[in-house]
Length: 393
Image (cartoon, rainbow, N blue to C red; front, top):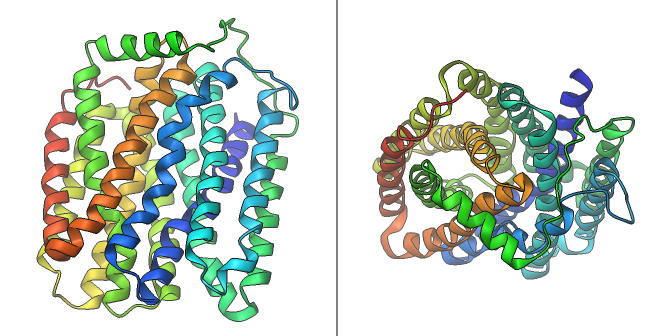
């Protein structure tokens, strides 16, 4: 079990490094360079591969498939692809060539979400409900540890040695994380027929929708994802409060994500003890409070805004653990758990994609105060809806 948890941490770290750079550092650099809040919101186009991954999810269920064979062979190949796509940003970062960078962010995200699908399939097949809670906690911890590197250490290092050396080093580290899966073997031998047709995909969705617990799951997913759209404006808010992109990266990519590591592990343990509905409801309520305070302190001092921004990011990490648990539990009822999980997380990503872009547009019209007020109301609504979820541990 320990080797599995180490591999999980390394796999998710490989996702977190470029993910944090593209969603924390790049928006701050754009705002510092004069980009509008609507342009900042457009960065959330990186959610597009997550929203569309159901198009290729059936191809990976079941594995093995050539040319990489086993699940872990595919995982290693995808990690190397993420490393190469991040390395390709080298000639673009210093000139801040924004839209080619966004294109590489989308490519990196496509590799990352495919990796997440295989990771989720491994957990659903080889881990029981209680073990998945711990594994998801470790997974989020690994992802945010990667965020510390990509969102905090990388801009700090670039300030000393330049972006070329910093990105090359980070890309090499991502590639090395693939070594963690060497020697691992799948435990599950459950036969599962391949899922390759659109008809089968629709049937999987139909089954998930008609389950008794589907209403609360879908409502909680929509409300939480919509409220998270305001997070797209947090890096820009810090820049407008007087923080440069490097200090913004330190606050969100280091301070916040380092705090997420113990909080995400604790969230997994709390789910094992009290159940996912109670824990998710508590997290949503806390996020509503923080977003409300951000709305009221829109004209406050930079220290207050920084503290609330960090708290918001920490709660987002805890929410990820709880949502993964909800999605995996719900998807386990489908004939193809990987396809079911893909459908649920694709819906989550689609809402986040439009919520992030919408938050940027809303911030231009209503300012930060109005944007955070709307997000807080959505989070409080999700707090109530989450209590109706099945509370299995």
